[in-house]
Length: 119
Image (cartoon, rainbow, N blue to C red; front, side, top):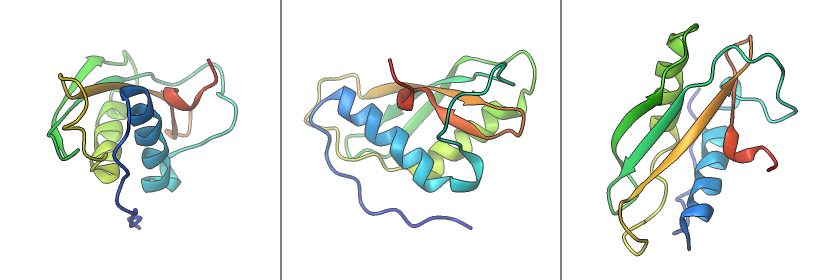
């Protein structure tokens, strides 16, 4: 069942936007995510670059790293991003209007956004 998310806040920086986007990913995809410790070894780690329009809607998604196994996880990550969008007005932030998220998939094909992992 799709989650209805509240409208996103306009982030004050790209770091804030990445963190807000990661929280929206989890909120929009509760059955497809986990938030506890990362389980090693991971099944797959797709890395996606999300290019945004000024209003925070998705303009384009590009895979920067494709997993060598569980290739379907890239499509799962793209669908999760589409469910979480829009990500808030970015027109006041410096261009280019894009961010990168790494998806940490476990064996159950559930992911945790890397942006939610402690540094």
